[in-house]
Length: 59
Image (cartoon, rainbow, N blue to C red; front, top):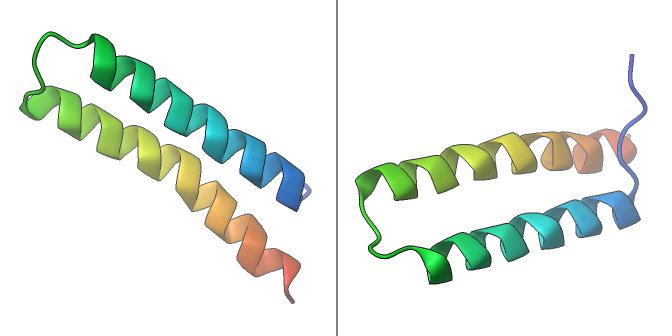
């Protein structure tokens, strides 16, 4: 089983995801449904492991 992420890794991963979303949203010619769905799915792929690591670290 994998080691949980530490707090520094969680913060860096979150900041990279936010920066990527900022770049995508500012460079998009228009913001439509598929773009929003893609950002939501990528957020889930980033934040589910982060939340699991934070919850797992408290036990």
